[in-house]
Image 1 (cartoon, rainbow, N blue to C red):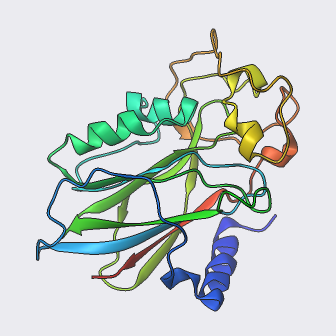
Image 2: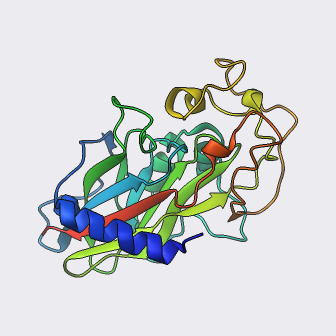
Length: 248
């Protein structure tokens, strides 16, 4: 298996060759900007999230710029209510509202869903948005790995580039709030709608009664594909890539 570092290098070179690092993908969802975007102390960045998996869709990600003392999530700690809502239900609203209510947050955006490679023609495999940041701000991102019980992809407190573009791999995490049953009844219906195969019984909502846990955030082990309705096609080697380009 190729290393993630090698995959990231190959992916970045492909983007450069196609001119995609400098071109927005598609316009996105809702804005929670707390500050005047024309403030001379603010910088403007173009953030693009690419789904690089073959079968794992991403829910609407929350994207935030904030002071470095604020943390959206951390491995080894309990997930916040906002992260749990993202990881279990693909609902970014609680996290976005909590971030927008903090004086340590400069800008908050919620994008639209991002489809895996080769599964859809009506939902793009990347999303782009512009955000503002103050000097010294960090960037955090989180979106549900839709075809999981409580998995999410993201970055926490990423350093913003002073100039040019920075590209990083999205980490994949288990929120620790549900057992990984990989069963259709415990997974949101958009897995069938955006994923590579329909799950048995969908649409059936997201019941997930009796599988709650109180574990801490950990690296996601990936999809087993043999214990529930999920298939090996839902697994990933590289779930996503994030590029950030300073534009002003």
